Length: 188
Image 1 (spheres, helix red, strand yellow):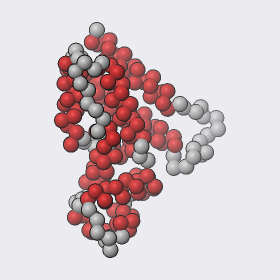
Image 2 (spheres, rainbow, N blue to C red):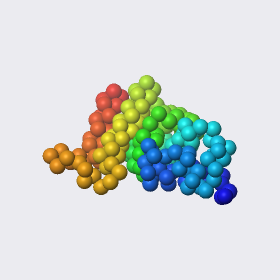
Image 3 (cartoon, helix red, strand yellow):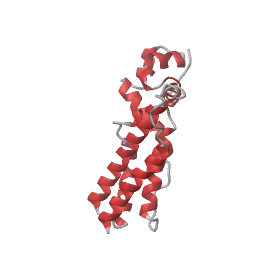
């Protein structure tokens, strides 16, 4: 039997996610992968929901480590960069958007607060800043959900031949520009 720790469990769970997809991730499969008895996982995570929350937090680490804005940064450029960073991070993991959807960034609340303060200090009305961050986040998760669903588990060969091919990155950029343009219009 292998000796494990919390970080190892989360890391292996994310590797399992990348291999089999979110629907096939189970504590039984994870325990087998770690060469431990399934009940031993409950030492680290009381429920599968707790495990999924830890996986979501770990999967978002690259975005959570992105530099925070500083006074003097252009808020428009920062807003675009921040949202693009969020998208890139979601795309790094198979079913990354599904894993993230509904999770609460408990350990990221200070960073979120600092981002909001930056927008407000830059002249964006507080309520508009809140709604724009929420809209950009939900738009990003939805866009990545669609992109990852289109990718499917294989190479996309099961897609209908008469369906138009969507350039997900261009569609994302167009939608993000609309959100930013709306926010700029509200601050003018």
